[in-house]
Amino acid sequence: MGKVIAVEYVTLDGVFEEPAWSGPYFNEELSGWQAENLREADALLLGRRTYEGFKSAWPHMEAETGDFGVKMNTMPKHVATTTLTSPEWNASFLSGEVADAVAKLRTEPANLLINGSATLVNYLTRHNLIDEYRIMIFPVVQGEGRKLWDDGTKIALSVRKSWQTSTGVQVVTYVPA
Image (cartoon, rainbow, N blue to C red):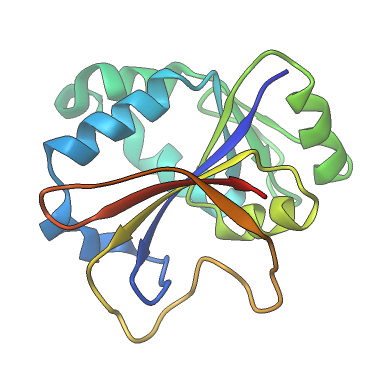
């Protein structure tokens, strides 16, 4: 049975969107950790907006990102969308009810990695379909912007692992309690 693993960047006040604020804190430690997350994943599970952003960026970044970029570009992608009709970039679109489609994917021996995709993360959280949350908490307060968690999202979590980078980023792996 595979796992669904959400890997997310957030500020200390929970802001998720447009993570340009992560730049000053991103270093080799986080780069290596992100590479390990990708190495252990068999496929990406993405929302439409993240898929479209990744699809437009990653094919042009392979030369500068090496093996990481090659894996991003070649691995299967499962995309939750109701508006797109022509999958590209090694993608397939989830059909039917998203919760049912993801539950079916979890029965296969493949780990699914979610990057970004806050709407999908919140939806899957409400359906108890995320096995791990790997959250990078950056030591910056944005004061405004979209939060990772929607109002009303509730889940009890337990810390499985935590560590801190030399730049002060807290990396915490949570599992549902």
